[in-house]
Length: 329
View 1 (cartoon, rainbow, N blue to C red):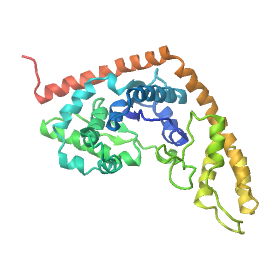
View 2 (view 1 turned 30 degrees about the horizontal axis):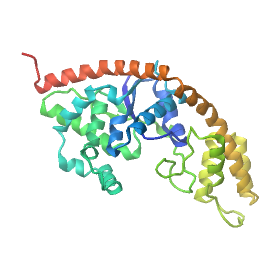
View 3 (view 1 turned 60 degrees about the vertical axis):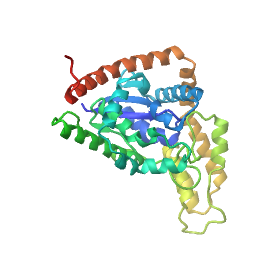
View 4 (view 1 turned 90 degrees about the vertical axis):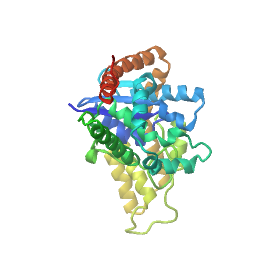
């Protein structure tokens, strides 16, 4: 059984892309591996959130992941800041990271462009904190998206550098968890690209039926009459892709045939898609609301999760300190 670590940013709601992309694979993964799922609230500080936003976002994301099926009885679910050992490992790994290599990361360049008034040290050392999160539990696998591949490679680099500097084989060099063909890219409603919060093109699991209908009816489609043999545009393909994961196969086939026959009514397509999305998300939204109103249960989940995570983390930190040379007299 391999050890898998995955961080969850505490900066917003989950959308259909998260659910049909990574989360459904997490549900399988948690039953096949030793999984640590944590809410990355330290990472959120790189954007200086308000205290109310920070706490509220942590609670919201925790409830949403649990509502989707992450099982705290199977996986270790915890909040990053509840495990202080990660801060010390972050400090120690910073001594092995060089400013030049951190400044060259694509994420740092993107962030200083997006928030030029808040270029803090946390942005620069973000990959080091991510490495500490992963190496703390000596993970073998990390499920990462395309935008995090460089950070994972840097984690491997820091692990290798530590091992070479101290002449040990202590840290494994973690690989990306390969979901293979199971990982589906869910498109947004704006006609191009993947679904995402920052793009403003997402349907969120916490959206009400009214919000979902309004968003889907505004989705981009073709304009003008179709001609025989005309292929669906990228925007229409995106709606068909969404329909392929939320609708009955016969429903998808019906609208594809209507398009091929130049008889499709995009308003009908979007109305059907909205209702099918609601069918998928409404039970999850109901469960999210139940969890949000049960502070005692949420507190129990993160308390037990922190306790389990700290057993692993304290062992690693104790051994790392000894390798470096911090030993009692």
